[in-house]
Structure formats: structure tokens, C-alpha cells
Length: 258
Image 1 (cartoon, helix red, strand yellow):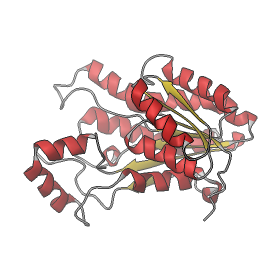
Image 2: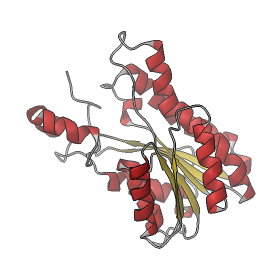
Image 3: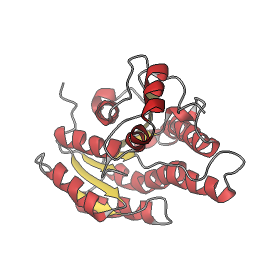
């Protein structure tokens, strides 16, 4: 199926590894020109090279988009490098602190900066560039933790807010012809990721988690998430707006049970 994305201009936060990298590569495979960011210069350079190998233009920015001004800098630099913005994927996320009430208010703020506020800042920065090109499409990467128990409350609450953000922005940005949707991955296994580290450190607990919480007995892959994200960004999904799409294989509990 031709998704109609050739020569679209796409931005991906956290695009140097994991889900973000697979989204960037999947967009490149569809003919998009891609800008991505990450916090480590070496991984950003490697990701840019991998995108360029698909025969499209690529731009990389080293940035911590949870820090003040960095999300805006990424969007502005990328828009100048690519010549505009059609598509945006806000993929960066994470959690600070432990369980409630050990997590401090600073942990809550950091977690919201990593998840919700980074998405808000990127979208706000991208809207003017999308307007200039007659519209656009945004996908925020949330998590099943946004509505299922298991994760630390600051992370779960931030992800719930990301999910709701899409439905509100779908209305807010309707006159700009900008669609906004959310994808919520379940537990995703990839090299260098947290679940790979947990599998190495706690093989028996990981195996029990796979058997108990996944109908097909395995975690998801970044490619499976990326396929859904790219479809939602495309004109093929033109009547999907303000939606929340879980990509979790019908996972049960959102984390390893204590």
C-alpha cells in the first residue's frame, strides 16, 4: 500500500534509538525526509546515516527536549534544514523517581517535562510551519501505563495526560488541518532498552512476565509500533483524528508485578 508520504517532511523526537529510530526509518522507507534528535551525538550521527541510506534527506540535532528551549530549538532547526514540517512524532519519554510517596515533586516535574510538556512544546513550535504547508499530522507516543495499573504514578499520570492531549488538540487545530493522534505501546523489547536490561538481570522474573501478561507470550517490537505510527501520520488515515491507538498485543499488567 502506498501511504502517500513521499517527500513529506517529518520530525521525530528521541529518534536515535528504540521506537523513535524505527519510526524514523519507516518514514524514510516511505520516502519522507526526516529530522530527528537525541541526547548523544554518536547515536544521532548513526541514526542520520541510517536514514540517509534509504535515499532521503536527514538532519540530526543533539538536544534534551525536556530542557527549557530545547524542544523549540529542535523544531526550528529541523524546519529550516528540511524546508518545513508536515509530520511530527513526539516520542521522548521516561520517568524520574520511585513509587509514591518517595517520588519528590521535582521527580513529578521532571517526568511531566519528559512526557507531556515536551510534546506540548514541540507541537506548539511545529504548528506555524505546518500552517505554511496547508496542514499536518502529529502522533504522540504515550503508553498503556496511561490507563492500566503497574507503573509509578507520576509516569502513569503524565502518559494519561498525553492521551487526552490528542483528543483536545484534534479540535483546537481543526482549522489548521492538523490531525493529532496518540499511540500507546505496551512493553517493547529492543537492544539497549530497559526491558533488555531487565531480562539480563532478572531472567526468571522476565520469563514469568512474558508468560503471564502477554497472550502471545512475548513483548512487542519497535517495528510493530512504527508501522502503526506511520500509517496514522499518512493520508491513508485522513479520517482518524483525536484517536488513541494501543499497540500492546493485549498486554495485561503494565509492568512486572511486585
